[in-house]
Image (cartoon, rainbow, N blue to C red; front, side, top):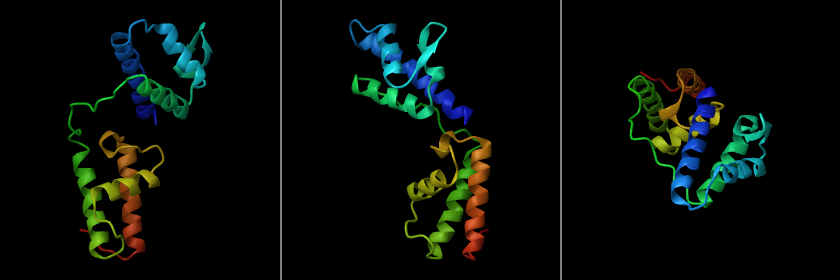
Length: 151
């Protein structure tokens, strides 16, 4: 959960920096006004993202996008320690598809299922170890409940 919050804070900082460079006249007051409109309250004399909920921060990010902020995917690849767990999830999902338990064999469908099952999981490539472990265990349980053998 803290990883997602940290990511949202980073996106806010990047959005503010990009808009400062892209929009003439953009200043800290403009940034703080949007935070306030999206639910921020004052902290140490300024409207602060730390007083906002994650949905409020996401709403502020949407406003920044409307003003021209274009978030880019990180150029880094999936961390090596995540790859075996994601592969395990994909293998189990394919076994369920082969057994005709799920209709959509795609990785996109598997990721959507995991996102629905594990609270706070938005993207497997950014997931914490705990989130990935929980997704694996929940999918194992789903396989067992459908009597699908996974190797």
